[in-house]
Image (cartoon, rainbow, N blue to C red; front, top):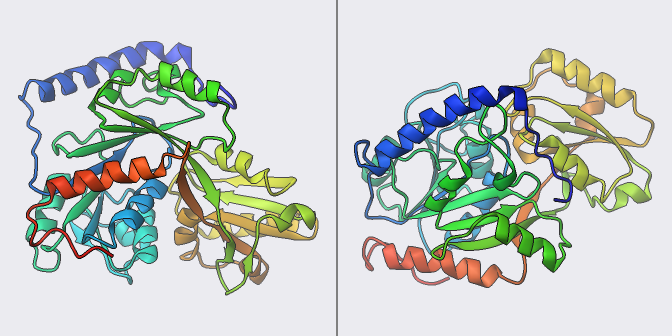
Length: 370
């Protein structure tokens, strides 16, 4: 596979066998009904993965929001990873990343008219969305990263698989990056191979189709990233990423995400000189990080800028002590998902048909068509 990022630490395989046995027992308990999955009389779409690290969940959730929010009252329910609060919390536009987590914050800022809630207990979160006065008119719930949360039986499961780390080539933690065996993909209704290069040969699609062992009841799609106009994090300026190479700009790529190498490779479409400054996924930046960012930027030749992700921008805005040089030169690179192979309409129909057919009742669930 082109740019394959799969790494197997074979000396850890004995631990992976033990981990796999525990996962198998847990899944068997759900399959036998000893542990119970609960269904709901409302369309619930789960967007998740079985791989540790970024597979593009947030951009795909945002795609579904754009698709559905003009016709339905949409809610996103996330666990709010690394937030400093606990229990159920319904976000507002004034909520902070420390209260709800960086990804829910990003979604709420971009889509202020939808409901965004966080709760590690997805059952409780769904019940609160359906019964609380502020949210009981919800018509569609999008579960963010709940593929392993089998206590909720979503009506439509979307499994995301990274093109550069196919689950068929990986193995279980800790030797590999899989949370479950590749065979657990059978629970998915739709499988999306994400982060694909924009120019894949037909043979590449066929190889992936064969390796993923798609079931007759499943649909397979491929998606890629489109990068939009960059915006200043502190300021109103914008910049087309295509001018970076033309201007021979040196870029400090500042990330605290699951797969920074993927973004670095993508950025080489636009720029020749890249210096990565990488922090752990969901990293909360502290004063010493501000000093590191400043010194690293000043060490780059002019012209130079900092490029970061939307997810990192949420946490960087809370960081005190950043120099004016850093603040003036930090840009956020937005990402949007595109469905490939001229199958956008097919994918959109798959989702909208599911929602339409499973709405609670015709009088309250479907808005007038936009």
